[in-house]
Length: 179
Image (cartoon, rainbow, N blue to C red; front, side, top):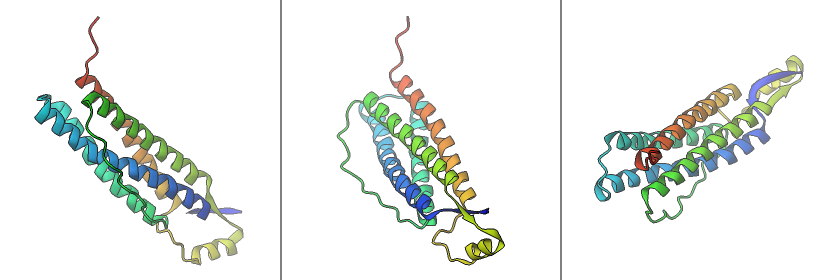
């Protein structure tokens, strides 16, 4: 039995469900980073330019990730399904950054889980005739399994960097007391 570079229908459904959760997290992040920057600059009068640059980058990356995730959902034959919930009232910046860090970690975990599902749910074909039949079918998806894994790996790796950047922002805003 040979394998085809496609994800099983069951695998696609599971990945799409996870990616819709990631989409919700990404939208939450892209809405909150500008609010945090505004709070820092205009209300708290914090003039840490590097902190503002890092937070702006995180917001832009969340916007880009939301687009990538939406496209991947569609390419897997799904439909992006998200709903922006009521945005929480601004609390202190330190707490908001901690919430953002939790969202970054959640997104990274979701991308890792989706990658595992794609890795374990490859379409199998029996012999040459099976490969030919599988190849001739009109798949709902427009992306290969290996391409989906590459995208999910990239998103996972970028989230790892976002976690580090967010942790640094927390430290910059609330430096640890010197002993």
